[in-house]
Amino acid sequence: MDAPDPPILRAVTSSTRLLYQLLKAINFTNKVHVEITEKGIRFSTDHARVMQGVTHWDKSLFTSYTTNIPAPEESNGNPDDEDDAPPPSVIFQLSLPALLETLQIFGAADAAARQARSDIDPYRSTNLRNYRSDAFSNQILGMSNGTCSLSYNAEGDPFSIILEEGSVKTTCNLTTYVPEIPEDIPFDIEDLGFKIITQAKWLLDALAELAPASPEKLIITASKAAPYLKLTSVGGALGSGGIDFSQGKDLLETFSVRKKKWSQAFKFDMLKAANEAMRIATKVSLRGDGQGVLSMQFLVEVGGEGGGVCFLDFRFVPYADREEDDDDETECEEGEYGMEVDG
Image (tube, rainbow, N blue to C red; front, side, top):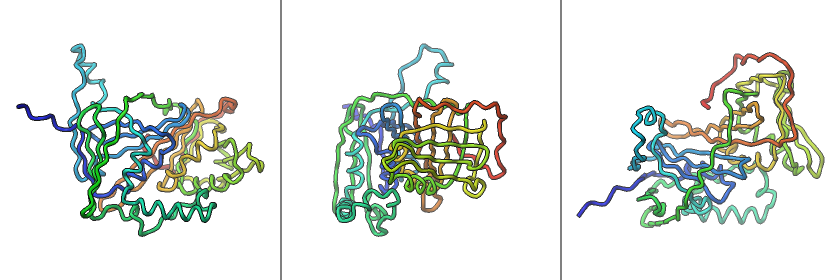
């Protein structure tokens, strides 16, 4: 009797904290697009083709990570086609709320306590700055005495998560769905209108200052002269507001604008949906291309010995009623304080 094929994925980690945080940062849709590769697991969410969030669980986040991805169908024998082919992967969809609930099963008591506090204090539940977690919560401490095992046996099978802590063992089988395979929102890195790198907490604080007016739009303007970066909220019940980043060299690690200025309007609630990424990240790279698409790339530091970094990527499509100022300014040079982040 032939031995069964090994599972497509088998991975083990001693903590779900970072995995949960990275997924929660893109929690703005019900379904998440999952792609398993030899280097890790890619998760992407999409809202009406105007907002996209992407995160990766790199294989380095696991104590054990093995894959047995089926080889792609043979090409027509052209070696050039094989060289240009993307690396093999397995793609499906999962329920994002179900996946998040599973990863924080051992933190359910913490979640209930947080909900009780927010019921008593409604301001706490809506305040964008509410990112101070309980230092002794399970989500912060992780699963110090347990493990989390992920497995995916074959295409069409459930995605299995086994959580063990002490004598308690929980097995969750999540239904997988046929992937829609949406294309990424186009972003032309060769046609950048501006690029700015700054502290993520400053962007979070700026949105927190503008949020109480319940604005409809947020206009982002990057210009060569002060204020170098300006965030303007419009369409709110309490009027408009603005935040200026006028001290460029003190607040912006990298700053470059191709023309005199780059200005586009975006739906405020879409940008606010990225506030979880702003909370856990240390830095953010803001970029806008010639078509007005905004890219936010967040750098999340991984603690522990030899800790590395993870990235969260968001893309936003602007309103169609604004046009970039077509001044015939020459391209500006990047300042001495520039710092590169991989695109």
